Length: 255
Image (cartoon, rainbow, N blue to C red; front, side, top):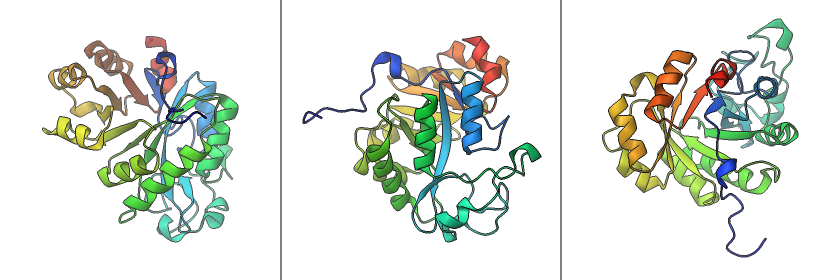
């Protein structure tokens, strides 16, 4: 690769689409699993979003919560469970019998699945409390080293400014988005400080005027988690660049 070239720069046709599957396709399959990613692709989604945390032995894995109980057969903090132990848990049966035995995937396994399906991803860094820096570093390094060459550049996002800064230090060429629930008054300063190109916010807290301010300022604006076509249509009418949905199949017909 020639010196100075950014392999994660985005041609216009490689940018994230208007509709992105949330945690794979969380309305149809157990969140943050390979089967959820496959389901999103089968429904026609060209990109998915998923959460990444660190196991107890510092392996990046797809997972949302700080503890294991809600979505696996395990118990206790994920930060105290090694990757080998996570691989033996059932992360699918809670959603439905058809998904029993679905494992907690590593980020490496997810990247291989994305490559096979030829779909892109928004990788959300979801650090356990107190592990913001090491999680951001680990995710940034993993993506920089292992992102499949046949895919569009990934997008890193997080609610944690510390994790975003650590990811930026590890993988400065990968685009980043700041996640917020309600858009803060100092949104512009935060985006500038973190050198983020995008803001992702909770749909129900967004108002049209603020949306237009962000877009006019030159930032990309996406909303989560939008499952109703009527709301999605309204947001797209305001100029919102993307919608993250548990049910991407409901929204894709709007495009």
